[in-house]
Image 1 (tube, rainbow over the protein chains, first blue to last red):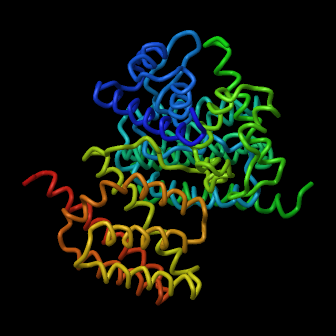
Image 2: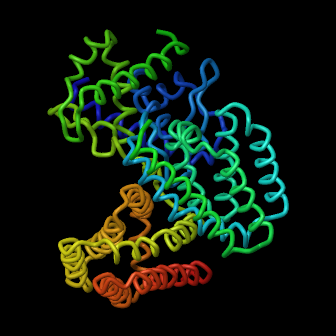
Image 3: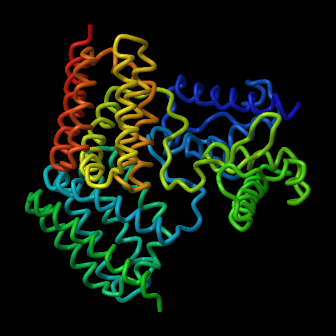
Length: 232
Length: 232
């Protein structure tokens, strides 16, 4: 097959795979036919099929589990995705990312105060309890608990697209955030600001939840700006 | 090569390609070595290399141009991407998408009023002039001009991550938005609301720009909600 015709074939195969998932009514986690069955069904060679599968895998539409098979991916119905190719984030991008979070997350905290169910509130409390236990412990575990706090708050706003946006921002944030934890040395202040946000959400005080989330993120951004201007 | 070792090899190749781009200091639009050179350099077969390339192509990190070569993609440094596998959007998702836009776009209109340069303002005016010319014309052209208006306003806010978020939301929105244009039958009202937003931005009135953008998007969502409840 020539270099010129291959791309078109791979495009067409990607479409046929998506159609197979849609028309089959398959949901995330459902198992799809094997690569052998698929290449027979579509009358293509395995390498050509695998190009299309890798492409769908890279964007979360399918999951290929070693030795097990092909499954519908958890992200197939998401509208917005984190860039899976980000490996490091520059200082300027990090500040823009925090600037974006300052715009997006505070109104979500307000919506969370209006919409959160009792079980969601207990779950959020447990996330902070977990963070509290890691305050003197490992960076990675404290980091995970803190990110879970921000994701859970966004989810409580009750809009799946907004949740996807925040999830995407926090995912690309991930590796760099650990460095922030070390920079933003007052771990306890960070923790207490999270607690204050939870309290406002529990009190159903949307304006307070919004302003506390904004103040918290502005704090983080300010500390990082200072550090970037005067590195050790 | 077995089913079990292939995924790992493709993962590793994807990393090596990203490293090659990064360490080579390549920028979007730069030409990369040919598939032949790459498979020699990485000592892999062409099908295996192509799996990694398709994966990078699907997420905008590279562009493969027929008969021309491989180039660094425009999206390689984006943090947030639209899901390239979205083919249709359900009514519930469309309303959530509009709900998300109602939260995100108004504060960006406010930031645009504060930050927009004179040239950006003239460009935005030209976009609306273009929309005005298509008011009685083709849906597709009016749609493009309207989406350009929303993208340009988001860009004027001066934060590239926020621009990526809005761009992602409008991209998945795309096909469905045309249907909205037909549903939201008062094209002139839509146009006049855009004009009013531009006026507030030009007047550097952040609060007015924000409230007009919010009212505009709430209008669109309300009309669509009514139509979905009482289909023709």
